[in-house]
Image (cartoon, rainbow, N blue to C red; front, top):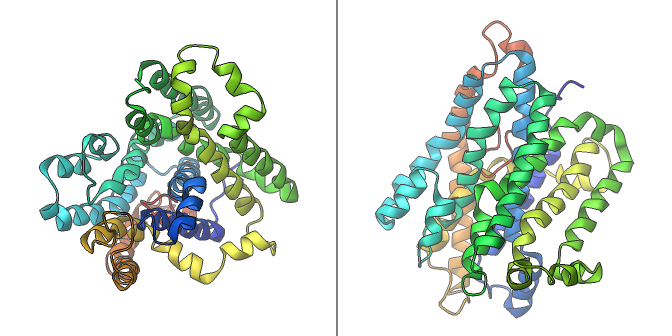
Length: 392
């Protein structure tokens, strides 16, 4: 079945929800009192927000690549659009924040190694949040050539037999090699921020792209795979594993007996994409319908926020740090200062989109196709859906 190339407005709304989740987790822990902190600990909103970006990114990037491949668009055109979308404002942010960064921080962020390099810092960096952008960039280096050079059936097999098993092998290697007794926090961060592990989320999104036509044909029946995704995520929780008896089974074998009790939280690398897929599947299958979920996701305010989500993601954390909204005990230093930080985040992101990103996107549109067929084959697209894009 030919890949689709129409715009999916509901995905803009999902992107907005993702960036709001990230904002929530980066607020001071006691912003909403002890109750809010407990809810955040259970739901892990920041993890879910970033993972939702990852799955969206994998879906939309693969979708765009399949369309480009079918239209005969060269890989270099795709890469040129990626370059213009991602790099200019990212490196502008690095330049602006460089006075507050050490040489190590600047180096690992400039080379897109933040997901590994910032693990070894004792203090929180102004660019701590760029770890997710590093993972996406590693994916962009690996996946586009495979999709463009291989037949779709072959690249899908590479995904199923290579990329996704690699993520599982990475987690197993961490369990066997890591000292979870003394360094559980480090190894869990390494799993959750490691590129090869989180390629699972991007791979889930890519897999959805290969089956978009069949997915849309499901209609209301798409609820069944969504429910199955949620059930798998629940089963991977501590309570779920106990309920199905798997935790007791794992405790009988090494290295699981010693590592697993502390490593259980690292299973979020599987649970989070399941939850993300459960949201994305109906958003795609019901796109344009009058069902409650797609209608909510098409709300103008959500879609507007989704369009500036890359800027919101990039700028919010440095602004939060610069304005020092969090006290040492995790409370808010000043609620007016917190409101100012949020207002500046949305204002700077809006100005960035209006005066920097949109002009670059218009220029990037020159690389949408072959010279003669460019206008006929070009199609509006949501972009890659991750923190690093809103249009391509």
